[in-house]
Image (cartoon, rainbow, N blue to C red):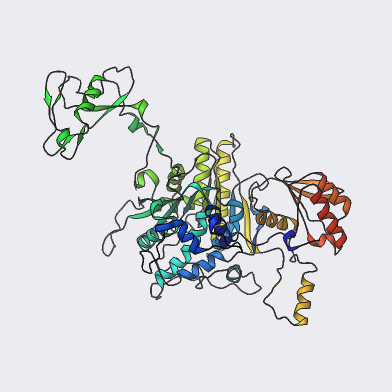
Length: 614
């Protein structure tokens, strides 16, 4: 007998259900008979750690509670493949997704939850003219389709969030909160997120980040010097910086990489006394406070007594200094009569150093450089976007957050600077970092690049070509990307909200005789099945010919997908004989033959194969 459980779930991950299951795994004793959570038992389990007061510190704003509805409403959309707009579609693991990032983040949950090492985003700064999301912040797939003209009507205009609006900051928070919440789940436990922002919302972002990621997971605020000269017409002060806020997914597991030492830093290490332990540099032995136990004379090789200056003391106690003297770790200068310093050997320090929190334009570039860089890549005299980030800035971020095989996500992709930086870094060190970009097709009023998403794709195409022209891709690196576009599901859902009259129900039934939308290809359907089954969109797909029919083999045959509209038992048996873990059939392939469907399910059951229809 075929049941609802045999049907493939076409929704994105059910966030509340996932959180409930996580909680029940941690506290199985709070499970009720109906599988729900008994909060009284949970309070008992947590004891004094539960705050039951009505007033508590935290960030609140009008609409915050509605954000959870936006988070918890599953997406019924899909991501349609666009091989003709891609580069090396069949082999690449990089993704560029065109669509609303809230829906995209929902759709990525099943496939990428806990797999992304680092996120970098450069969201709208809420300056009053750069806010490009609908005024109704309870966005949905339908909202996106309406704004991009995919509902049969002319597209609506994207709007800005003006500072004359009474809910200026609240709207921005309502836009950011669901996206950060969903993004957090995509991060690995050792992952990290970097968020660019300016003065307009930095205070709210700081509090919002702590709300989403946790008070203890805030790492630091980086100050980026974005301008190299004074803006003479500034009304008050010439603003020359922006911020990058950094949060960990779990600070106990966090992995952050240091920066390679440059020639100047390496040149500090010398060996003037021919110490057999190798190169060393001298370090200060003083601390800038008086501690009685650390105020005493250190006697040099010439007999000179050295005391710490007034207001300071030695870094170590008398016993520790005696040990260092015996070990030859105190340096008194070439002549033995200089103030003592501590010898730190090169072999004892890491090959990398922690990044500082002030980044000058000399090290990571400035905004004008980012603008010129984009214009140069696209072959024009002017940049189609104002003030894109320089790739050197994102390259610095990637160096800190990514190892050579990790995934970076940018769901406010803009001109595609993140992909540019990752491809450059891979060329530099031979790595194979992967990127996932998401960009809204916001109109630009240009004929060459009608939307920002078109700029994103074209920039990455040209970066790939440039790198290949330079080295011929000698290292066989992944220099490509798969394009996917947000759209309605390939399958028409049953609408339970319609009029229940016989006429309306009859129309619904007619739609579900063939419930695949008009114009959708087998490839469109295949990638929705992959997405809704929890497979990455970059998963290898092969085609098999079984009983003269095409069958898709996923990840070396773990799952087989057959989209043939005329299924037969010999074909089903040929699929079962390959012993996949699961199979997916197109429901209309059974053509109403219930006996064939039941026999197919039983054949799978005999081999412990999960049977699904869609």
